[in-house]
Image (cartoon, rainbow, N blue to C red):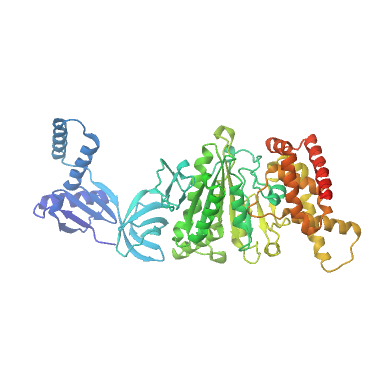
Length: 577
């Protein structure tokens, strides 16, 4: 323990020194053995440093208080200013026992791998921001009897640097001013433009309670036929996107963001541990699609500290929550939580916390549960806003039974599993319907989609099972051959380029045409071209039907009859050509 220090203006006044020592003995219940230092700069009074606390009762600090008081409170002519100064000085002179200002400070004892161990800071709180000499910012993550452990967010420090607590937790700028912008988890712009946000929000906040939530019953359309028809996503849902590296996980999330353009849904994309070039390409893609104007990108690059990657998803969620509590619908993408867990494991191991399965700390489940529980559909009394979360998790060799994937699967309301073999075979999006599920179900699906996609999931699963036997040249009956023929064409219809999004009406028309057997009249390689011609024909000749479906979300009997009539007209024109 460092020796207590007492700084006085003069050593000549022994009675004043004795009074100070006696006062501290009564206050602390112990007689501290001070190292006494003379410093005339403090003018009078004293400054005591004991166990990481600074007791400042110097005249210099009181004069600073005076200047602050004059700056903040005094206005008017010179006479009133002098009167105020005189009254303040008289009060200071007549006050024999002015209270001392008490504040904490700490000293860096070790620094390595962006983890700082600090002696002192006895009044520090968990999650509090720390200011280091030199401008570095740290986040308190470990409290002990002898000091604290912190992770650096920005900057570097050196041993013996002085640390001051800020008394506040991490915050980020929020509001519509962030739309179209790229910021880091502390709200610092990364796109080279100034940011003037009028409001901030704490990075960590409690999730809405059960009574504050409403049921998830409104679809959030992604524009992807395979997902909207078989694995519907509702506003306020948490749907996991999981799969191996390079299987199209981010592409699905970007398509979902791009499909919200013009639908009144704000989007937040959180990049965790990605290369700066990757984030730049992603932002460019959104700008070209016109989706960046209603999107906020919160990025903690791979070059950022582990602490910045750790708080990134919470900061992005705070940005999204501001919109949700204002009654807006929001879509947030966490890309990806595997890197987030690795960043937290890195900090925990460096802080010497006990490790568990796969070296992750014991609270790694709470790491993601407190984040994903913040997604909700709020009750009408609280504005009716919603926050839909699409977390992304990367697997190794398709192993969804690993520690982090199983944790997040148990937290979310379903998962979209992308299979590497399907992706490499050209089936994109490579959605494995057998391992994908939406626990919200058809309650988050338009009635029109429900009317045409009832058996789609079963048909795809049966086709994939039978295709395994057929590839070995096994003898099959006519009914099985017909099922394989229909399934092949259905899989072709479910193939969708990244830059092609289908509105509800076109998705309904595609599935209705498929169940009507329209595409069985084409060879497998001709299906996609026939689909493009069919959609062009419907947009030209049946636009009123498509608009009716998009407006109502339902497939009325007369609309269905009109579509089937147009299917026959299309086939007739195809034969003539």
